[in-house]
Image (tube, rainbow, N blue to C red):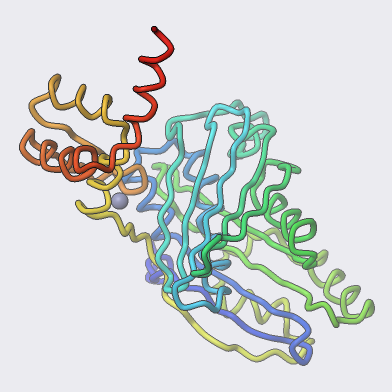
Length: 316
Ligand SMILES: [Zn+2]
């Protein structure tokens, strides 16, 4: 492996054509590989999740809000069932697949991403620190991820977008390359500019070829934007990073209804909860479970009492 393929993950952003085009390009090999190792994923799941993480990383970097967070969830009727990736504005990305070992038949030797995804929906949740996050759901148009995100932008945000996402695997099933780019036309862009950009995009080699040639994000942006007078704005490191903690997992446990919690307490010496996103296991012994139970279910905050009363009344 060359030095190049071991570079750290990052997203480069740029503007072009006097600000009418916003552009992002990413290299994400390390995060795609980390997801593969953490979740013990099949190659095609690694490709699918790697693409989704790459999209999320660029969309996260695009958000301006300091505490912004974006969650992309793909739910389909294929064997992987669900893929989800979360990115924040600081370049932290976490992701997992519901069925990490999913596989799909491939007739051409390529990783059949749409075969494991199937038909379904993409949901984008943008949390920009307001009370209510922005939520948009669109149909999956291909299950190949990039087209699905492009369609989301067209329908939900009325922003013409070109996105290309790619993951290449080594023969030993480790990730060889991962990355992509995203181009967006601002509302005031002329039809002529849109056409020029379209022609350039259509003439580009596939993203997997660009990645396989070891093109850096800067080089990919140069290929696309060289005729548009572009300016590189920022190079932001991105990485696989989960923000789970004992406290957060404890809160999730405490969020169970009291009967499930009681059941866990009487049936198990300790309760192990694994973080879906990173696989870290947290264990809570009986004393800790009791403390949680008392704190959340006994101090007069019990909203189940009303329900119990109704049930009792119903039996009379
Ligand atoms: Zn975690």
